[in-house]
Image 1 (cartoon, rainbow, N blue to C red):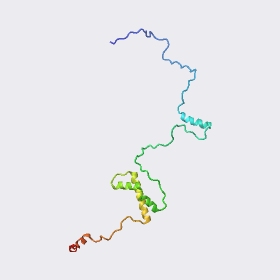
Image 2: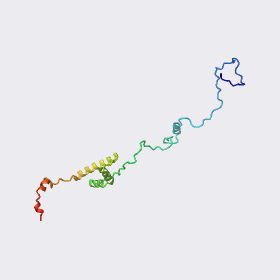
Image 3: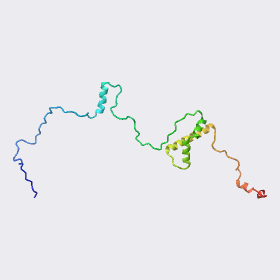
Image 4: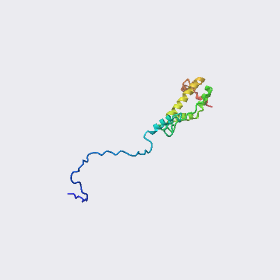
Length: 169
């Protein structure tokens, strides 16, 4: 059997005269409470107050901070910065500019070596090569070498036709 600690307080003896289940009415507040801070949603209500007073002609945005849009996707560090478009006076000048483009030649060398190239770089190469082809057609330049007629006959036939006696002293 658990031990009980002795206490000097005397508990209720008998039944109380009034019931304890009844609620007491709250006393009416006699003083007005101080309000600290602004009420919730003050950001929007301030804008309406400024508009109502007519101090400013343009509506002021109550939000603080920069309104500059932020890119939500991380930018690649190896993005290809395309050169600014230069207006050429003639197709010959544009063709010369494409042929002398250092970035294009570097990318073409990289592709020839079999190294991987990003999508943006590949798009840049494809676009410039397509333009180069169009300009060559406009100027009437053919990059394909003309077929030579030197080796029309079989080279083995010419080898067999050699007379060794012609080369002796």
